[in-house]
Length: 88
Image (tube, rainbow, N blue to C red):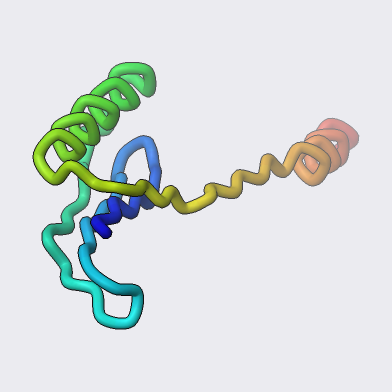
């Protein structure tokens, strides 16, 4: 079985292509898709999509595994600091 593993990000998306059994996989390729900060986020996401489409066409994986991303916006702590700053 051939697996494409993806570690998603807007600016630096990592990937690896593995083949074989789970106990002894062979690495067929890996890299980081680096997108310049000068591109707007929408263009960066489009570029990542284009790169991944090329990787899928090249390696023809049987499965794709995507690492789950976790994003935490610290809204409450920031608003608390803003209220404190306004009082002083």
